[in-house]
Image 1 (cartoon, rainbow, N blue to C red):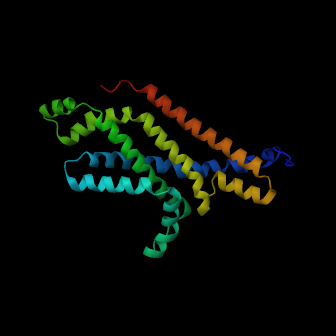
Image 2 (spheres, one colour):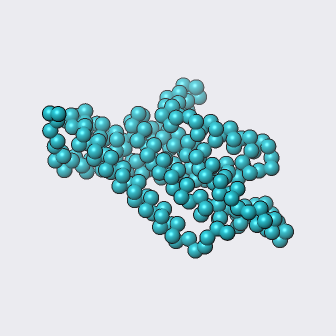
Length: 222
């Protein structure tokens, strides 16, 4: 092996590479928020007594859970403008694709949490005159959220890692910049290693925050 390691290039171009973290976070953070909200809504729909709402939830989850993120991303960014005339910026297309895929995964996590709540709690709340909305707001969702927090953290981490595929539509995140520098200086090992370290730091930091959130909860689900 004749490759000569020159990690010193990261000293000079590391700040430029690290600047891609801003674009990675700006893409992943809105996706995480939308993923969580859509996941809750879809999980509630999957528990509905109306077959139309249950059916919509099942079709949504099965469709966007099975579609590869790369295919979904390319379809939204390149195919939709041809079919509808509506085009999005690379960042917006990425947020839409990551949110749809993440919401399908989050829905299943929340559904598992909702189904784990004993039926006696729901019956007791209804006997006290709680409406279905109040039961969902005050009884079901708080317990389901904390019960599914570890699974939800995995979903969020998956969303962050999927940001790397947005390099295909030129979102200037870390991998895009690593590829750009590699083409310019022919140092793939150094720049891609630097990109890996930056993503590990970002995801580890987010996982640490979610663990702190788990510890901060004041009560445990019954």
